[in-house]
Image (cartoon, rainbow, N blue to C red; front, side, top):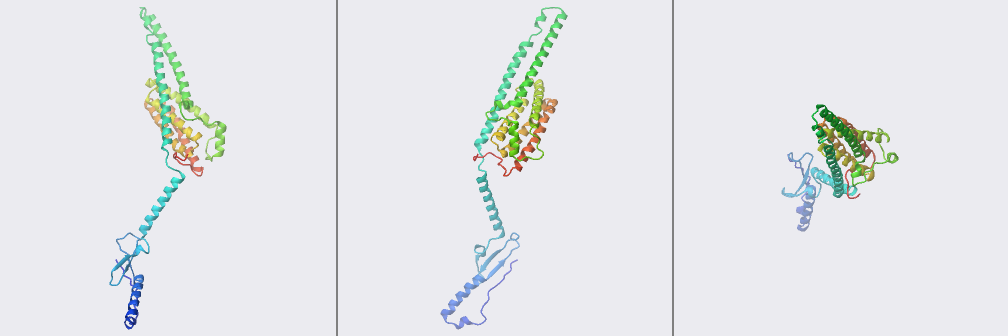
Length: 342
């Protein structure tokens, strides 16, 4: 619906006709100029967006002139669009200034360090498979061949018993060796890392706790070494159970645990050396997901092995909540991604 509002007024007397032609023309032009300024038609169409309005001017004879939006105001829709564009531009400029672009170089460095560590540990596991196969093959291959010369059943039975006892002894020795190897791998996997992934000492941990704000429910610093030593013990037991089922060290389930250890060493480097709380908060999600994936793979091979390793996932779930809480309460919050401004 269009509403026409005329604001033009004309003089009641006929002064224009009584004046000279020059004055009459001059006054006529002045009156037309005033009419163009004062006459407005307010148009509000039901088809236009809600809350929008436009103004147009009219000249003599009812002809429309230039749109009032060109020299008066914009529609509400145009104003809101410009405000959104201005706000987005301000946010982008602020992001570039404070955070900078994502550093592809640093991300590539992190991925390379994780892959390198996992490959190095994988090569060690493969070499150990070859060595264990050679030892067990030479020790038990023809353990009862000497008994074949004799014809006495008692002699054959005695030789078989001796071979079984020897095999059991070698198995115990092998398992003890593997236990300490996996314990070393759980506690010192950073030996194979190209990054400085050393854990902070207890004194350093206490100082860091004083420098950074931490939630009230943060466990005491003395709890962490005890927990990690216990988890290292569980890693060793569960890995031996998987090895006994699969028959080799260089297998997919154990390599999943190796990948988890490699990601954990990278996370220690980012957290303790580079001290990037934001990147650490994102990185701990990869540590947590890789741990639960390794638990699932262990469970697929042997459910008991999965349950033995499950405390690792539970503890890392608590640690993840702690890391994100520390990042959140330390203002200003650090960036969640590595940038070129580091």
